[in-house]
Length: 95
Image: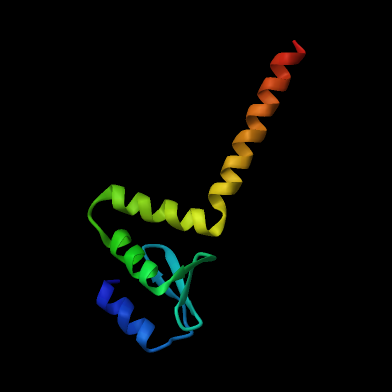
């Protein structure tokens, strides 16, 4: 999915989701695009499409991390790691 195809999809105001490199884009409202449950403005969604289609693997990872941050996955990962560290510390403290 190229940037031009994304713009065409957005200009048609399609209610069908669009898949870009395994991520679903859904139009909500005038300037809001939902990407895997995270809210992005139209300009941010275009930038995500550019990064996801980039040949640079760092740009692709950056896009994925941005999506995860907006839809709450990073928060869940951080809380899980904190809980794991607390359990390990508690187990060592009991010995």
